[in-house]
Length: 192
Length: 428
Image: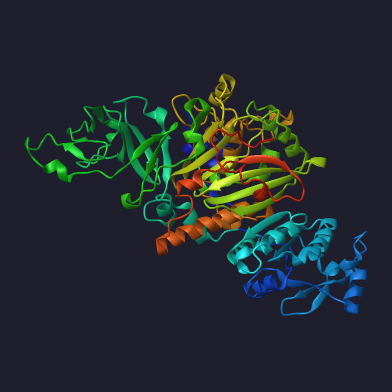
């Protein structure tokens, strides 16, 4: 007579869900997000990014979005927009200036990535959000928006609400928060 | 992903752990009232937050919840005789009242004061709605009783069930604030489940499989808004409230009853899913109540006499690949509750979150973890009372609504997500 061992009598699911079986999960390192871009849409947001950028990140790059008349950036934008029919003229004058670094044309810099995180404290970056949103939509890049709270500027209590409204059409996920730590938490969770 | 040390902090709820102490700030469902149906009925063994307890209802109808084991030799009081206003250990006759106070030690002299110094750890047990609630924290900081709407409406308007889930509470809870899985995992149920089908909102759900999300703080936790296209009408919003640490609601569909859950840790590898349905302004119909008893909607069909689902890991959840091929179920597992539970249990008793690959759509989960961690640490280091303790935080509702494109869900839905007695839920 053959006697089944306890392991043999368990169903497939019961056996697979046991703590003992968890030890056999493949331990290969998980790839980080691909070239994540974290973009401040206003100066206050850039100030936050300036100290977050100093942390250890996998591939993330941190920028301030700004308008530019630099002919080199403009030309680079022209060269990089073949896949962006109907891009508004204004978008060609938008640059991403790396925190503590050089500027790049928006359309050229939003390539080879699978997530863009927009960070705002007010509604002044609405046009930037739209331009980034259009480029990301055309290139199937997921966008997330973090709005840092209204209590940052007592003189502008509606700033955060304005920022939420500005980002809503263009961010797949919106996270209004009073806590900068939420941005760090989001970026960490996304493995950027 | 989540660092391993933070994962441990969030998943361990035994005595003395930061999350265990956090949970002990709140009133929690301990059991269904039906488990103690009459005075002097059999006592019931329960485990909560990794503590072994015995619950009983004495001759006067008072509820007691205390250490499962007799102070004398450690025998289980599950064998106790519930009689004469107390629970007596059958081994040597020691007897306890509902406060855990020993009231008789037969071996001692008749007038001995010995038993006055014997008291088992005990917690209050209070009936509100279909549930018996307990508070396992410091008596000095016991908060007012909970005020969740599902437990306060007249009994003909509400129904609660429970089921054992074989994984850590956080795995189960995170499903409760994860709106994006509904379109896939539960797609069959939206078409056929008697407690879901027929709502206009279901069409919006199925027509737009890539919702946008907004995650907003509330006083007691979060509101997670999921936005889908509603054609020319605007956006279809489904708003899921979370009240810390473990109460979630599901946005309603049509005039169906509103449902939600409490996710209560049994120990670190098991939890109770309490699932409720209620209607704010009308009695549940006999058909609705029968559907709930039959395990439809968020409820489960349990093995008779137990709270273990009939479809469970020991029978591979009765997975039916043919039903899956026919399009009746998305995963092959029947029923909303077990569709969720099967996948959450498949992650193992405590999933290793350092191996996750989260995406922006998981922001509600990311934010909830952050809030739990901060609250547990603030309580541990500074004694700060966490959100969700104040009964005012319990007076929330889920909502489903179509809004013009430009409107903010929170600004437009302040009333919709607040309990208003006598006012129906906001639903599509």
